[in-house]
Image (cartoon, rainbow over all chains, first blue to last red; front, side):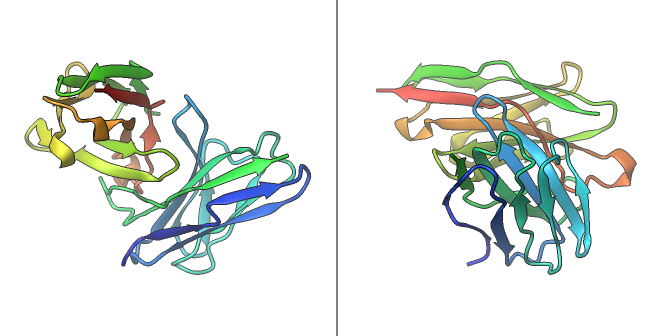
Length: 113
Length: 117
């Protein structure tokens, strides 16, 4: 089945530790995105990538980093510099063309204690 | 820059009643509009989208939305809701700025629809 796979579904980390969230897609999409979701705030764009080996900051990139070494993969690292990392993280992909819809993974719920 | 405002954070309705979820957007360029649904602890699923043409767009699960350019609105409607429609709904916009949209979406804050028996 074609789609986007995020892992793990739930993740717990201690404060001060970096953590990497996985996102893989087999839709042959060029563009990939990371969003953060907090209650009542909708989805906010962290980073996006239009093509392999290229990525751009979104609206809330501070404390996060990404890489795009393969078309299929777009991992997100939540660093210790992120002041409030506990949230639901959603990965998405699209063809990246005008009006293209985004396809979403099932999300990773990160809890930092 | 573009923004999306969903006017109601929560909408409670009874089963088989009609519902409207309101969405207004602002943008200085042409836009594409989307409605997504999210069930608890899951990703988002596309309900419908407006790219061009007819302003009335039909989507999955009996939902429809109407694009109103003069009022910059894209309200979502369903004539008769079911218990299974209980979920959070997000309006989103992408623009044609710079010649390509890159698929980047700007989302509203979400509307929680609760259908009561």
